[in-house]
Image 1 (cartoon, rainbow, N blue to C red):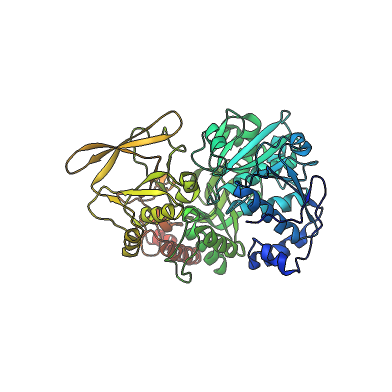
Image 2: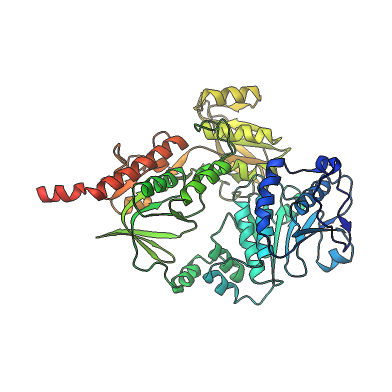
Length: 567
């Protein structure tokens, strides 16, 4: 990548050009379609966004050129975006405590928001969102979050360690960006590419992303709800219980409203149910404990969903979400405590109680663990379930992929494509995945160890060094050196709440439903992976549609009422 020449050094601001010359066109790193889309998005910018890029001019650092070109492209898309170039070690970088190259800072005289490393892949989405938030000058935090941050008196340097393939990282960094805008100069929001700065990642014991270092000693793994993020930023400890107290003090929203249909889970089943509910005339709302998309968002590539020959999991979720939002409200990061059934069905969260006439469980599944020594110890520092999130950190290293189904082979192929030496470990004699995936595994020459289980995962204080194998036929014990263990051995259904209210479960703890997605409880339905069966996106979508239509039919003609009258 040839660095662009137009951005001025030091404090000279680059004036945006229209890139009309052929030379400019050749330098674009952004595809034409992306440029057109972003140009439209940036028309809404208000105040000027100053991008300050700091590099060390090291010709061996490929990320310098990529970041320069990326930032230059962005500055050409709007007259409200300007670009200034600095050199690591100069007056500017010392003033703003920039230690790494490349670094990108946003309006540094006003805020302390930066990218340490090139904003590649999923991080590019966070970059665009940051531009918008800085230009508007508003944090967009909830009133609860603002009240929490108002109590902060000590400075915070929040580092969000990310990777280009992590779909959850942009959301976590935006929590930090909004906080930095709400409390400018008191909070530093720093998105660190863990792949570009391995030594810094090692210093903070990063093995899974998003990894948030709220301080030198208090860290969290995963995407947090906004209010919880702000509270842990303030208190530097796990603040789930305190968050509940804070949220309960907030003014209740839509007090007394009773929805026609409440949907728990914002995966494909839940999103589809919301669409069909509204089109049937039902007022619905979707609640999710975590983020929209369910397991799909962590799937690198989907190649068996009708209408898409190949589509990224994140992209498919965005399409489903945009469609659903036209029909229903979706609320993420709801800490769901309990469900009670009375004249109306109530779902109790940390912040409020939602009332509804009917309820669909589309709560999906969670990853199944090996339950072996060392698994918990090294989770997040070498043991992981998410190839798209954490794969980048193992490039050039050797890892094991445990499992023999579609997910395991899809993830193994993804890791191989990233330049990782991957071996599949399976407890049976044959793989269970689709033939197409097995054929791809052979083409890529990914080895498979059959009839073998992991008995122990071991390593040093910070990282995995190997595993202990056991051959289930010969019972032979052996050692295998590796740098990481990716686990894809199936899922456990999130059916605890359904079981608590009396819903009948199958022997494998999935929710028992009939062909219409009805449970044994009137007004209670279930859809998607939580029901078991063929766990595919297309079947989850089908379940969601059927469940919503059944709820509509039953609310119009309550079968339980007629049955009660017969008795």
